[in-house]
Figure (tube, rainbow, N blue to C red):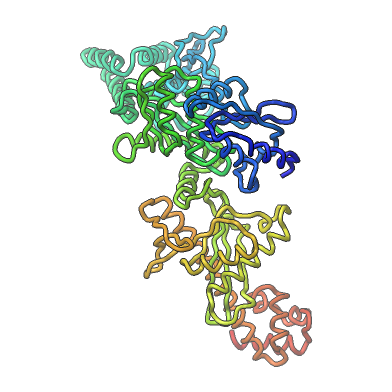
Length: 611
């Protein structure tokens, strides 16, 4: 670390008291860059300035910029929490979690006619449009507008009407019955406005009122024998009832609660808070953050920051994963809300399903930021959690050994980046120093050669020049123990596990040094690890067969007069493949390094006779 004051800071911590309090970190200019609390100031602050190389990225960056610190002793840890929240609000330090609350009022915008559109907007402008609102929740506005447009089949495209009537074919929404197809020019402005007004009534009065009004009009149309109109109204009622049924999914038996979940990917994460009031989902907040710490402490810091500015604090807060200092947070929130607030981590039932829903929302949002699917984000998050890693692994390397007897022993390395195979980084190894079929020794040779490349190419941008976040070996505890001993010797600190198969060669568990971790209960992780194990086996066995066939071919062509082992190896090196040698002409063979005209003629005759 480049901080020249590290020794001074460490010595200063030795005089700190073993009392609760708040510590304030300053940079060189005197600016506050971090505020934290501690049950015992001396223990907590000292930890920042020793073993700094083992810190998480966020802490490492912060310590790198600390020039000095000060502290305030409090009577209790609870008082320290209150003071910490106050100081974070006052100074907005760079390395604390700061949630920008830019939520203003939202509106439903009805654009000027003809053929007005419904959209959700964050501000009201003087543009000739009509606005419904204001609404507190932008989430509710977006959802409601989307539901109204779909139920009443209103256009959501960028075409201008009536200017673009009949210009081009209708879009997909028309064919899947999500749009009435105004672009065809067959719907009058009067008919369109009638439908638009029905959609506005739906937004203002809700689904029940709309269904009641539309049902009445459907019967009137039927009595007037306008059956086509009655059928349209019937379909509209079904669409609205379908929306109402889907909305039941976002109802909760707990009438007043917030549900908090955090999905992670490398140094990025997305936190989602679902707010239920009156048993119904009324709002969704999401925040994209970086450089988080260990999970329980990060959840605690997020809750602190989120509720610091909130006045609407519910009685129940359900978390997808546990946090630190739950009782302390509950006391703080209860005093802030003026009522008893409980923080729980549901393990089963409807509340667990709701926390899973919040987590899936967070993973989905993060996947859009990272150009990955939510399943890929979730499986790496879950794998990291099962293996006890501090963050989800982004780069995973897997290794396997394959042999045909003791003559052809090879190793294969496959790479997964963000849960997807990165085939351009796959590597093949011919085992050179191990005599016989010692799997442990072969695996060690392959890993040692791989990390010799790392030491030589570190920082070069090559695939060998970067460290993976996780290494998986096709093997059990013995393989892990052997490679771990190698890593300890050469100074490599990377999480290392084995992939264990059962008697039928199916993935059964993950091996660690001294035991096993069952993964079959977590289907997504089980499927992912199985896929990795199958891929590294496929790649390695493919190379083994290729090399075995190449060796056999070399031996075969030495039967031709004038072709010895050296000349056979030189031919394969020159032509690259056996197929190229077989299809080469006599003249082409004679031009290869070390070849003569007579040897080329002899080899061509031999190959023709073999065919």
